[in-house]
Length: 158
Image (cartoon, rainbow, N blue to C red):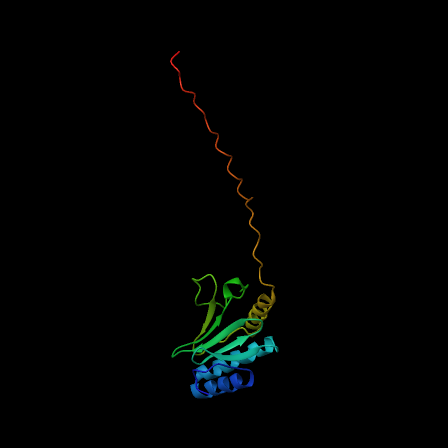
């Protein structure tokens, strides 16, 4: 299976394991630590491998992704803008109205309790029923009144 393929379950978990090993530095350690917290927060979490090699954790929808860059490990929460973040963990992708991310740099320690609360909140949000379209609130348009015809009588000149 190439890194461009998608996988779920055990196959995805093996690919994530391999990514952690391949990183071989603080980024691998950070990704492994955050992955453990994600799985502790929700044992029902599904691991996936998508989008040309991105670890994804989902439960009822995407919870977060784990990307690794040269100077950061980024955990992007798909619906982060709708999640409570009283500890201020979100520090990246703050400008949008959907996603939020946590950029972790070398040596940074994350508040495990706050992070797990964020994961649990994301799972809870994914479990909410989808909003059904609301019926239109405008009353239907009234039919136009028939135009009255004006009949003009010709003057007979009398």
